[in-house]
Amino acid sequence: MVKIAVIPGDGVGKEVIPEAVRALEALNRARSLDLSLETFDYGADRYLRDGVTMPDEQVEAFREDYDAILLGAIGDPRVPDNRHGREILLGLRFKLDLYVNLRPVQLLDERFCPLKGKTVRDIDFTVFRENTEGLYADVGGIFKKGTPDEIAVNEDVNTRKGVERVIRAAFEFAKKRGKRRVCMSDKANALRFAHDLWQRVFREVGAEYPGIEKRHLYVDALAMQLLLRPEAFDVIVTCNLFGDILTDLGAALCGGLGLAASANLNPASTPMFEPVHGSAPDIAGKGIANPLASFLTSALLLDELGLPAEAQILERAVRDAVAAGKLTPDAGGTAKTREVADFVIARVEALSGG
Ligand SMILES: NC(=O)c1ccc[n+]([C@@H]2O[C@H](COP(=O)([O-])OP(=O)(O)OC[C@H]3O[C@@H](n4cnc5c(N)ncnc54)[C@H](O)[C@@H]3O)[C@@H](O)[C@H]2O)c1
Figure 1: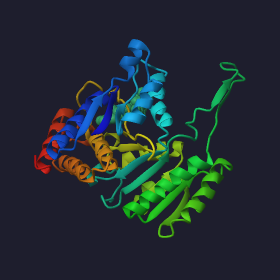
Figure 2: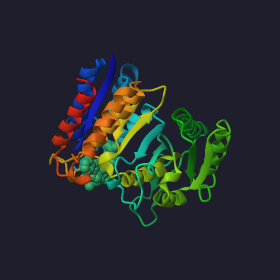
Figure 3: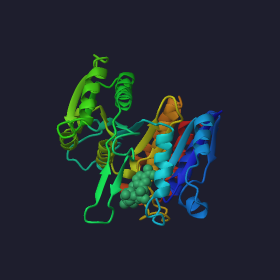
């Protein structure tokens, strides 16, 4: 049995993740997969009700007893300091040591791309964002808070082990998927210590992959190149902060957050899959959230669990929805979340022979 923990979370997470679960259940039935999906209520409602965010025992249970986690989004205007968000999301990523944040940037249809003259062949790369260190390590402090002499510090934490494992994961991915080029991006010209480490490790690890073209770009140059020549990239590996920013840019190249998927990985732990978008309080409850990112995220989950044929069925069903123009307003359509999901799930059933 393959055990999947489902955490819809907050806002539109509670609208799109149940649709992803319906799609996974449809595949489960049609392809006799033996998936077991169990839903957990962590999120703002639970936090506001009883103060619970993400108990350590629960993280341990996820690590020991589950094969994957599917998470919607965490964030709620009723929790302005986002304490529950940090503890649930960063807690899972950090405590499960999910050091790779993998984000595919793949254009499904030219009409989604804001760039002139770019085709689906031009925009197809994968970002490996370091996911457990860097400026997100929560190391720092505030001194003399609220006074004119206030000092606020966040440390940029980069370990040899942390940098090496994400760079190696990017090269391994390129090798397995037949990708020709890996680009590492940093800001070593200004961050002379932390990113010097990235430069040295990239050279050392890269030497083990002679068949793969290695390239380095400072992050400002990369941001520009992604707009001018996105076709020049196959795999990009970078630190936590830069990966966060660049992948939103990547999402914008492909039609926005409603279509962007991500996986948090460590081969020795329980992987977690989440759409890139947040809880979108501005549209939550209106029934118009785009469910395609959640379907594409579920396809990543299936692929990672060793079910590539099923992952392809789900991805193909999403492409069919795009081709048919069955889209929510953010993607240029007029359909509701449920209508898009019904279409995708019907295609999943048809493509599964169910
Ligand atoms: N991984 C996560 O759980 C995660 C990620 C980002 C933000 N957040 C949280 O979400 C809350 C809102 O953050 P934000 O507004 O900066 O980012 P957001 O991703 O929630 O929304 C940004 C914009 O994209 C739109 N959008 C997002 N998802 C969409 C979807 N599925 N369909 C259609 N439109 C969609 C929203 O309507 C909004 O206009 C905050 O509390 C933030 O902390 C959580």
